[in-house]
Length: 84
Image 1 (tube, helix red, strand yellow):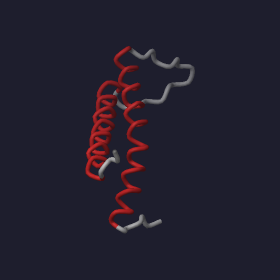
Image 2 (image 1 turned 90 degrees about the vertical axis):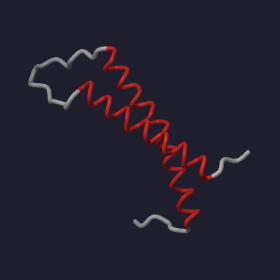
Image 3 (image 1 turned 90 degrees about the horizontal axis):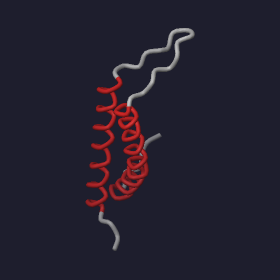
Image 4 (image 1 turned 30 degrees about the vertical axis):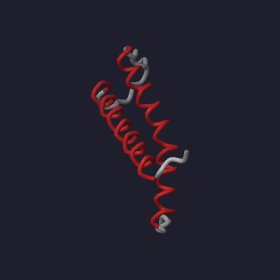
């Protein structure tokens, strides 16, 4: 059975929300990035930091193909191709 546009849109929105939440959570855990001082060792990441980074990466990997499919389908459906 083929997925309807509405189902694709729902999956796209869910993936977008997951990416947004994952990156917000990652920002909350890690804070603002700061450059290392000369000779300074990289910080050791806690399990919570690693888990937040992993979730953000996985969320983005799911989101990108859905985003591409959603917008290709929407542009075709609306007859409104993207402008360069």
